[in-house]
Structures are given as C-alpha cells and as structure tokens.
Image 1 (spheres, rainbow, N blue to C red):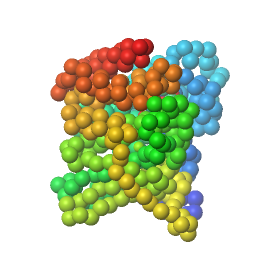
Image 2 (image 1 turned 90 degrees about the vertical axis):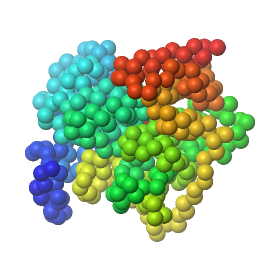
Image 3 (image 1 turned 135 degrees about the vertical axis):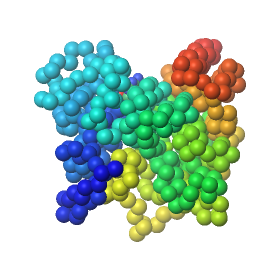
Length: 405
Ligand code: NAD
Ligand code: MG
C-alpha cells in the first residue's frame, strides 16, 4: 500500500494509506442510517484525508440530498426507484450524478476511483452490494453483519480470490481484529464477544412476553437503527455476531464465547493460549470502529469520544442468561452448523422483528419462530448464493405464516 506523508491541521506529519487528491474516496452504502451518518462524521473530521465518493440510500431521499449538498459526492445512489422518481438534475450539486436501483449500485462498486466501501445497509438487502464490492476487489469496512451471517464462507473465499479486504465495523469484531494483532492465529485459545445485555437484562422473565416495541427500542448504551436495537434486546444481535465472528476470523464455534458487560466499554476480548487476555476499550461510539476500518492499517486521530479516567467507572461482567435469551443458543448452533443455518436464522429473525414491530408477534415469539425455522429448514452444508437466496425466501414465508396465527 502506498505511504505518503501528509500534514494534519496541527502540522504533524501523518502516515497516509493511499488515495487521490481528495484523500481516500469512500462509498457509503446506507449513508442515511445510523452507521452511515457516523461514517459521514468521520469523513467530516478527517481533515481531507477521506472524501465521500458515493452516497447510497433506499428511500430517505431528502436526507440523502442534504448529505449530497454537504459532501458533494461523485455519485448519489437511490436503490428504491419509486423514491427516486421526480428527482431532477437540479436537486443534485454540480459534479454529482444520480444512479437508481440496486443493479446500478452494484455496478458502481466496480468504479476504480473507490478506495473504501462502507457496507452499512441494514439486513439481508446489504449482501448484494457487499458481494459486488468483493467481486471488485475493494477494501470493505463491513458493518452489514448479515453478509457474513448469510454467506460467510462464500464471501471470505471470493475475497481471497479477488483480493478484497474485509475490515469489521461491528464494534466487537473491530475489538477482536485489534486484539488479534497481539499474537499469531495458532496462539488464540478463544475469543469472547461482549454484549450489553440490552434493556431487559434484569427485567422479570415472566414479563418478557409483554414487552412493547417502544420498550425494546430503548437501548441503554448504544444509539442504533431500529432493527439492530430490537436484536440487542433479544440478544439475537449476539447470535448473529457469533456467526459473523466464525467466518470473519476462521475460528470454530467452540472457540467463541459471549459475556455480558452492561457498560459497553470493553468491546470484546481475545484469550491467548498462555492465559493472557487482550481487550479493546472505549466509550460506546461507533465512530471509532468506522474510523479504524477506514484508516487501517494506519492510526490517526479521530472524532470518537474518549474514556475519562478522572471519573470513577466500573466494569462488570456476567455470563449470559440463556434461559432469558434463548437467541444466543441459536447463534451458537448456527455458528457450529455453518451451511445454510446462518441465512435461515437471519431471514427468520428479520421477518420476526418486522412481525414484532407490526404487533403480529410477541417479543418472546421472535426467538421461538427462529428456532423453528432453523430446526425445520432443509439444511445444506455447502450452499451456493442461489441456495442462500432461496432459503432466505423460504424462512421469511414460514415466519410470515406463523405470524398470522
Ligand atoms: P439503519 O436502519 O439506521 O440504516 C439502514 C440504511 O440502509 C439506511 O441508509 C437505508 O436507506 C438503507 N437501506 C435499508 N433498506 C435498504 C435496501 N433494501 N436497499 C438498500 N439500502 C437499504 O441501520 P444501522 O443501524 O445503521 O445498521 C446498518 C448495518 O450496520 C446493519 O447491518 C447493522 O447490523 C450493522 N451495525 C450497526 C450498528 C449500529 O450501531 N447502528 C453497530 C454494528 C453493526
Ligand atoms: Mg456489535
């Protein structure tokens, strides 16, 4: 990777990981979402070392146009053609072109001017553009965990063939990525994902069936999009992250563990064979893992909040309550089985979360319908992308039926 010194605003010479006159040109997929907005914060704070080359969103056109006016990207992409209807050239800044529809976004991923892709579309919909970025051999800051949950082995293998690099943005996986640098692959005893435990860590178990969407959408430590916030409340988020870690780090499920850490300051830990445990600590602020992924392997100052050791703080850890949060077991199972298990778990969960938010399912039904989908699906050990898409559709249909009864 080319390395040319640059100067920061305070005059310090900085190592520089490549890029053109506008710094590293970033494609932000899902720019109007929680991760997308944090990514633009990181770009704005990067003193010209990063620029937005593509901003892509699904339906939130007015927000996207505001972002375009501020960041003046080369491309704005709207994946929902209906939402894009009626946008004239006058709505875009000069020098910005419009791409409409998911195929157009996939095609954009091959643009040689893109230095980094931030994959931050929510849900299974994020797989296709991430796959296109993998095909194009890009360096991908991956927030869309569903990509690896659904198709981890295929994505990792294809990335090896095309030269694509995947740097995790999920805070736990970013922490592990950093901690793994302290040893060699054969020296890892296990990795331990931390989980906040969400808003219902201590709520009486018998009342969980009565949880309302509004209660589940109030996360104690993180501010995130609605889907992942519900996943944190059921701890399905940790289930998905176990599967994500399985493929991202190439470790067997037996070397993956979960610990509940309510303060969300220790973002995960790696235990090495000698007993040393290396952790990464910082306040809960997604701008740090995004910043880390965009600049990797270089570290430069960024906008994320910092820990203040002048204020008293305590760090608590407790084992997850698997009876309260049965979703965690489903993640352990999907990570151990591999094959189509991750895709089915993910699709069933997406549909169940939708059902819960629409009032068709109770909070406790979410894990239950996912368990049923996982148990009843026609498992395949080595699926193709088409097999994965087919089973994704199957799982959604099954959950849809259960949600109606
Ligand atoms: P969000 O709901 O806030 O934003 C989603 C973005 O995806 C929006 O820009 C939206 O326009 C776009 N989008 C939605 N449906 C789409 C579709 N069908 N096609 C194209 N674009 C579509 O979500 P978020 O919380 O920012 O999460 C994004 C991803 O990052 C998820 O996979 C999530 O699991 C992961 N993640 C998020 C956080 C977090 O703190 N928010 C942390 C770790 C990982
Ligand atoms: Mg996470």
